[in-house]
Image 1 (cartoon, rainbow, N blue to C red):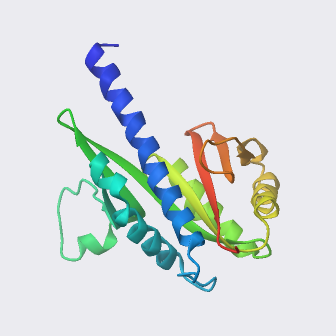
Image 2: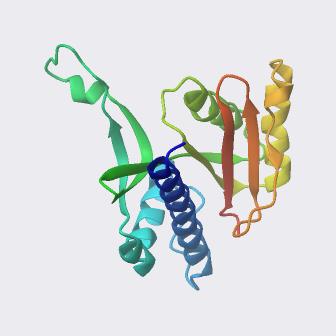
Length: 204
């Protein structure tokens, strides 16, 4: 591996870590407010929009030269563009970008609401979250769960139970240590690799 490629990979990894820091600091800011800026009946985009506000207000973002967008279009290479094509493009909940060494780096975040006792939300987390990364519908990134009801571990166990029942026991979410967030999990998928999961507890 050439020196330039080593440097680029190092910059990319540093950028990804900074993006995660911005997300977790945004979450910590939102739950530390005396008057909570959210309610648990919010939609996914509401929570994502709130995180975006805190990220944009974080001075570290400017110091690190990171841009943040929500509802980011993921442009496909269309041979023949037709009227309305943009409405059919895939979108991901949040993306961050950084330009360095004449390279542009991207970091993608998909988010889903979660409730311990809601089977459909846990099923959706798998089908439109995990599986969207595995199928390459979404680029490499992280998956966030907005927990709005119940216990984190029990909710993750419910997701894992669904995976096991579907014969995907080797893809379950496993709790891992993370330097800045307690509710961090990883799942491993043969055709994709590792997906990072951050559960943000909004039942607090």
